Image 1 (cartoon, rainbow, N blue to C red):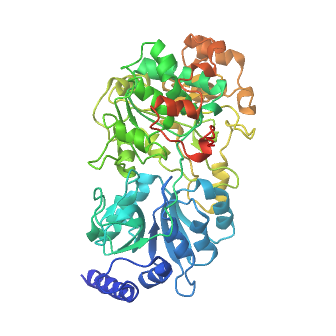
Image 2: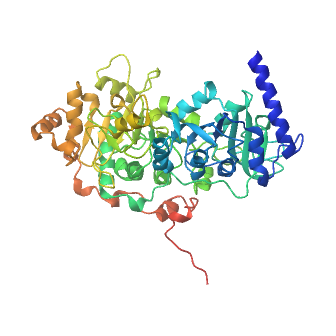
Image 3: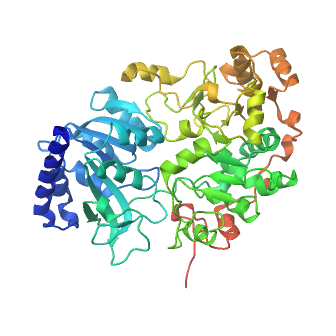
Length: 550
């Protein structure tokens, strides 16, 4: 009881200090006084959340915190889904924060590794998204949460637009445990199109000086899809989608999965798979999915977030996407993670390194990239109890007659674009754990969850392996001319092919000469826009056609 009373009194004192900046009973804070507001409501040692998804960023609030006086604010414990901006690390460099729990740090992965090495940042843990959200509700509850939305009214009600993403989870974690919630918005309006976050969860609203940052993270230009990607996509459909009749799935980001999406209306349709595979996705609105949607392959897509340029197309396809009464997408990252883990029969992802046990990681020398949602999507959910034909068949192939298995597919070329081998005897993650003081190496997806590995050489079906030695041999068989792959004897590979554990293109009835870009249902960004009926408006950096006016 004492702690509850003390927390309430502390919160009252903080709000009183903020009232001197915003005015008593006022929720709107002038943009130029944002740093003052944060210094009033945050205290040294606080646990603080800044919303930063894969795409949208509370960038104005992040910059305001980075400008705070380190003599007033210090030793903060930052809890963040994604570290994407320089300001996310500036708070550590300036001595404002010193402890971090996070999920993903792709854009800042190298800099983060430097700061960990020199002792500027102490990492509590690298989480998956769901894991981090769960801990926000349990033992990483924020004292102050900084969120972002499209619009607000004067009562603090928020409209997030199509990119709801993390906002509800972060706001609720703070608002119902005596925390303080500050929202950055693009504009203040008299009436919202819909209310995504109620005003009584929000203490202060800051109209930022420019629209919040958002990246078209899930857009892949079909022009960059290579023949090798097409071949891998063909093998994926022939070796996994078709025999397992996979209808509910999640695709990770990359050109391999983009190629699959783009050959559904061609290669998959030719094989009579329309209505039999890839009908229900948990996925952001990938532009490369447009041809498959228009061809009638896709019945539904539940979204983590939106994608720049897809707003009009998504709004017109309410039969496929979850659309609100305002006519725009409603997304939710936490719910999509749950849907991907429990409602999907397959995850298809990629990685930077795979070892002899099938463990994979994106943590390599000098980089702490984190995990994001891949471990949630790419884990066999032990709590699952509903069945499907796909799930049951995978379980049977694994020799388990009491439960099914989720298909977890890793699609990776034998060498990364920089020439580094994708298959290694030992993950860099083990060395990183030692240098950073982690209790365990940051493995993204554990090998015992992986069911298939697909490279440009072939497919390794690990479900059919009955020993660690067989799994290792299957991985070496598809590792190509890497040092890892060269340790496999041709005789061992032929034995695995004979038993259907390893499948090369010829084993799947695929003529490599047909694996060409002309199989793609759209070969350029412009062709995706055309397929959408002109509703997809590609972001400027993806546009190839320059319009000129006399």
